[in-house]
Image: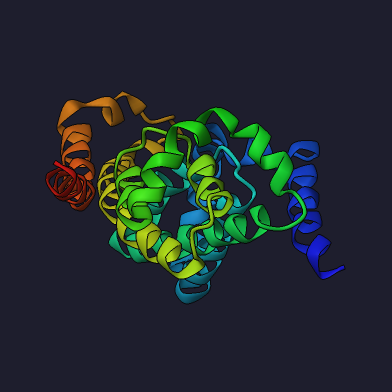
Length: 230
């Protein structure tokens, strides 16, 4: 029963999300509509809001719901810079929940869902799992939920997974929260923010550069192997 418990909880959460009005509430239009109520609650219940936001973020990541980017931007707009550590902790915890679930009863099903990615990522993870995962966290080249389950299916240990996730999502989270800080006035007017800002090369390029830099240990290791074999 312990093996089935976590996957069943995740499935129940998905069912609740897609069969209730939560999917509409967790949207920019729903956020804009209720923005004044949310900010008033946060002002009166700061610590509770911080803890609740972190738990909510962990739940969204654990269930692989399409709302993490919205919550990051909303956190920047509503909570300010304190949203950065809350998001990093919440997202890392949620990713670990998926990681653990992927090694349990649904490992086979999840492996089939991510089969295309697994075949392409397996070689990199065998060389240096930590550096490779760190690069994937820094560069959003694959869906977040895929990068949560593939390391588990390829035998990566939980602690290196947690550390690579915790470190790897920090730069992107900081950038998104900074962008979200500018959405405060837009949401206060009941309007939906312009998300085209997130595609700006000035935002994407530094994250790509950091991701490539994190792959340097893998590259150096391969060069040493070639020299030794040569």
